[in-house]
Length: 131
Ligand SMILES: [Zn+2]
Image 1 (cartoon, rainbow, N blue to C red):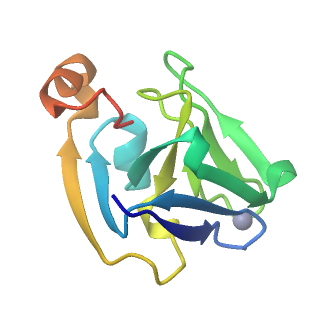
Image 2: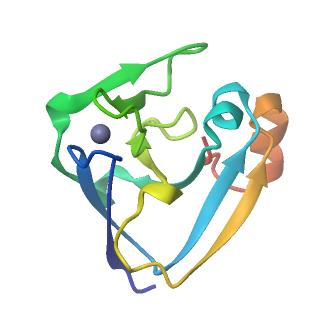
Image 3: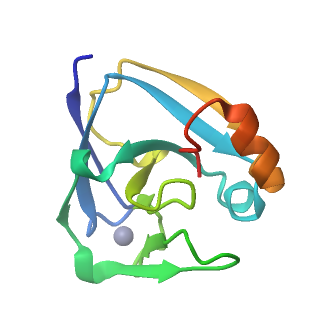
């Protein structure tokens, strides 16, 4: 599996990051309460492949429910370019539409029914790395 370095940012550009993943991405589209409001589609990666380049001080954090996920967002523009997901708190979820580098060769978007959390985790066939 060949990895490439993708780069992304929030809308105003204060928060910038990069991560290593295949050029062909697998993203998750979730129907839970916050993802459906944000139209959130994201890629889940291990923390070892994520690097925040700038903007640590510009990030704020929203939490609800189990307070496991850290829904990070830029204090200036309000965009969530990445966050720490409930399903993989030691990893990162990168927002698909915040990738700005021309490094994405293709993508597959899979649906996940996060509004029915336990059933969705069982049916995903993954280690639960979806939200
Ligand atoms: Zn911003």
